[in-house]
Length: 88
Image (cartoon, rainbow, N blue to C red; front, side):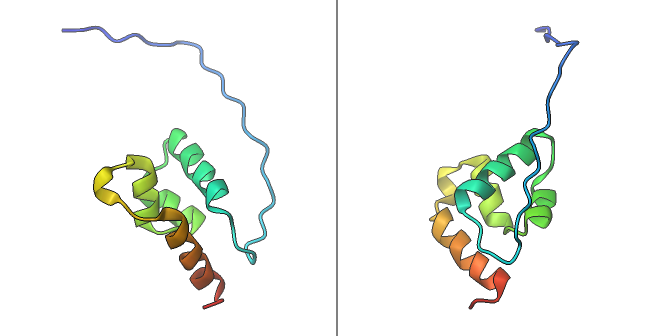
């Protein structure tokens, strides 16, 4: 049976919060960074989806990076942003 190494002293500094205008379309690259940051903090997929108002499919594909979930994430995100903002 292998032993696990533990770290006793871990310090993490919080990133400065940005004011986001919820009425403007967001960029997928920025949302993807937020998804990864939330995941590193321990949030699960449904929590991330609810907080960022992004579909489960997009969040799940980004986290799993599975070849079975091949979609054009940026194109799907842009379409969903238009729906979220009531543009389409």
